[in-house]
Structure formats: structure tokens, C-alpha cells
Image 1: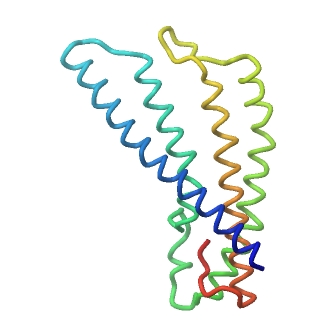
Image 2: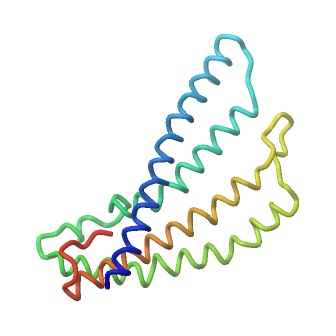
Length: 176
């Protein structure tokens, strides 16, 4: 059981670090947006590359932040049911366990399976921006889809394992 708790801790720590990286990317994106807006407003000079950096960073923030958000139980759910007075910790653990097994893990597996050819093709062709002055190496951004859903899958597995441990009486908390 100790190895399982260590694995859970390791994956939680990994997703915490990736989530903190995503938070720093927010700062980078804001700086780029402020610079780009001022360059366009004051100097009438726009940049396709800067605009693409903005949406690349936004995509990375969203993708890399998803597992962190799940880990900290801040994802979207129907709180009117989940937070109701008749939902005790044990029932919440069952909802989390079944939700992870029936929805989250299969969804991640479908995304990973269906995205693989898309990402492979982008890497094979060294896909870059179709825009003049755009960013090269767009395939790297597409590769982030696989990384993000792998991290989300790992966090989903950790959450399921944490719920099982809780329901078996091996843990006092239900969060991953």
C-alpha cells in the first residue's frame, strides 16, 4: 500500500509543478498581450508572430492547467448535487470514483488514441504556421495535447485510486 501512496504523491507533485508552470505562462501571455497592444496602438506595428504566441500560450495554459485543476478539485461539475446536504464524504467518494472510471479515464484514452495520428502527422511534416511571419514549429504545440491528456489521465487514475483507498479505509481524505 505504501508504494501506491508514493505513486499518488509523485503524480500529484508532478501535476502541481506543471500547474505552477502554467501559472507562469499566464504572466508571459499577459506581458506579450500588453506589448502587442501597445505596439499596435502607439506605433501602428502589429506582429503575426506575437498574436500566435498569445494563442499558443493560451492553449498551453488551458492544456497544462487541466490536470492541476482536477487535482485541486476546481473543475466544473454540477455543484448543486455534489454540494447538497445529503451528499456526505462517502457518497462524494463514490461519485468521484464512478465519474473517473466511467467518464474521465475513457475520455482521456479516446482523446489520446484519436489525437495520436494528428500529432504524428504534424511532427512528420514539421508543421508551422500558414501565416506569413507566423511561428514555426506548430507541431510542438500539437504535441502538448498528448502531454496534457497524459497528465490528465494520470491525475484521473490518482483520483480514482485515492477514492478506492478512502472507501477501503486507508486514507482520511478523498482528494487526490
